[in-house]
Length: 90
Image (cartoon, rainbow, N blue to C red; front, side, top):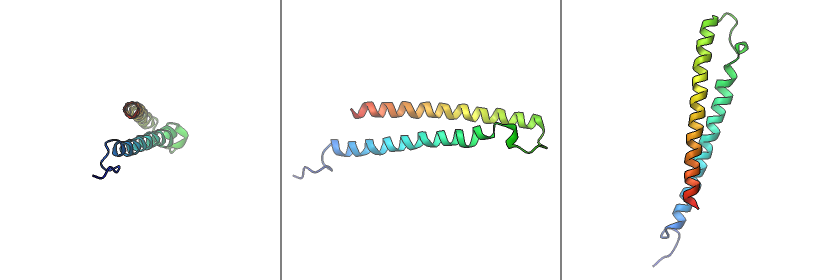
C-alpha cells in the first residue's frame, strides 16, 4: 500500500491550511487597500469638484464612512477566521 502524502490525513490538511491561510491573508490585504485606497481617500472635500453641492458631498461622505466601518467589520471577521484556522492547525 502506498503511504504517500495523498493517503496521509496530515499532508493534504497541511496544504489546505496553507492555502486557506494565504487566501485569508490576501482578503485582509484587499480589505485594507479598499478602505484606505478608495474610501478614505475621498472623504476630503478637496477630492471632489468645487461645484458639487455641499449637501451632496456630505451624503457621499456619510456613505463612504459607512463603507469604511463595514470594511473594518470585514477585517475583524477575516482576522477571527484566520485565528480560528491557525488554532486548528496547531
